[in-house]
Length: 257
Ligand code: CAA
Image 1 (cartoon, rainbow, N blue to C red):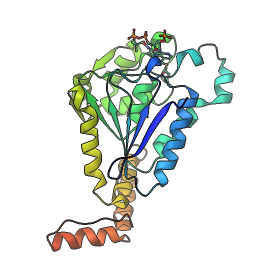
Image 2: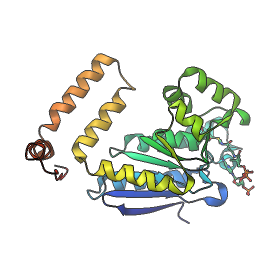
Image 3: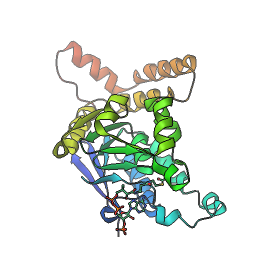
Image 4: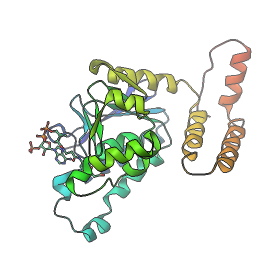
């Protein structure tokens, strides 16, 4: 059984990936993550895709890493299999990924959403890192990304208690971009994706790279990186088209070149 479904042309230049283990609340096992990695690699190379949406279903984005698959493993099993290394592909994807989250986004599910570039949430979404209740800790970026997203004291509280937060709280904490009624979350994510897909894919990629660099470096180096990417856009046809279209008072047509 395929554990993810893919629609390559969900909207113009927008692909949709849906996690598809509904009975297990989209618990993330190795197969699911391997399929997701392979799909992202494929979509990243497809010129007809400029933005990717990652979603689950109304009940669950993902309720975490698959506890049943991990429960009996030894530390050495975990090291040798190193299943979380598959997750690196999400972060390495050059095109923007929008998480469209409804229901549970817990543990690895919250981490998966946070590894995406933006999060649109339904009013029913619940975020949390409940690993502490299982006698373990987040292992796919939760201690780092949640802390960067909502600050140390809130992240510490959530990670040490395993409590969930509502979509509204996630919005006021800065974890998500927008909260909408449940029937609108995929539509809203699609609108956002379509808007970004109209921009130069070259500029979008270079901008994403520069924003992400801010998490990994000091200001001086980050500014130098940004400046180089800015100058690099001037090697693209899209930059010429964008500025020409502005001057000619028309809509630009970007080619991703
Ligand atoms: N792993 C494996 N199976 C899971 C799962 C998970 N993370 N989350 C839910 N399921 C399964 C349940 O076992 C259940 O299966 P069965 O019908 O075969 O018993 C099915 O999904 C439905 O779940 P519930 O009956 O529990 O549904 P509920 O509505 O009563 O509760 C819930 C929903 C609060 C999300 C609850 O399922 C839950 O607490 N899930 C675990 C959440 C969690 O601890 N996640 C962290 C996992 S560890 C991790 O993610 C490590 C990391 O950093 C990567």
